[in-house]
Image (cartoon, rainbow, N blue to C red; front, top):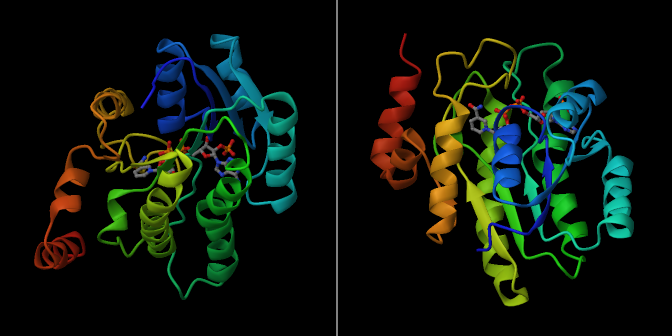
Length: 241
Ligand SMILES: NC(=O)c1ccc[n+]([C@@H]2O[C@H](COP(=O)([O-])OP(=O)(O)OC[C@H]3O[C@@H](n4cnc5c(N)ncnc54)[C@H](OP(=O)(O)O)[C@@H]3O)[C@@H](O)[C@H]2O)c1
């Protein structure tokens, strides 16, 4: 795939993994557009990188997704790449009183939004690449984030079908599969012990340059290649004690 001279929309591109991708794509000579709910966080990025184009939008809201697409189609119809990175991770259990409310929000952001954006953005004639950010938890769930894990399994499955279907349209579909990384996902502090985003970004760029379409790092490489028995063992180990 071509890693320079793209115009790229990165959802959730102002923080964590999205920010790592934003900064790396800028360095590789691309135009980057980012969106998120918090205008002040988007502004922090443009203060540091004035060339970044920003858009406030809540991807949980269908009308916001349509408005985002219509704005891109009108102002940036030369968009070549869509990166579905935005996501939330709710630590909860099915007996929590607000479980279903939070589950619906998580499904809207992690599943509905990428599906809807893909169905809209594949109408753009210049689009050549879709990148979906899934997770090592796509292979083996973590019970403290039960809906999150299931959304990532959904997105991985959908991404495989999408790759097959969009091939004939000349659109490449890439899955980024991060393991736990040090970001604010799920709340501040929960991922502090995990590896830094920078190593992940270096690795996935190297993999994309080498033409890989399922991009792994550390333990997500092990999960991708694990047998069913190894995944069952891993699930047990994660939930001991
Ligand atoms: N960190 C990890 O351990 C890890 C591991 C595997 C996969 N991932 C995946 O990597 C992706 C990025 O997560 P991260 O770790 O970088 O966490 P993060 O820093 O919390 O990033 C999430 C981003 O998504 C945006 N976002 C969330 N809800 C949104 C909404 N309704 N509308 C628009 N934007 C929204 C957030 O911006 P606003 O809050 O301003 O809207 C934020 O910029 C997620 O898909 C996550 O599942 C992360």
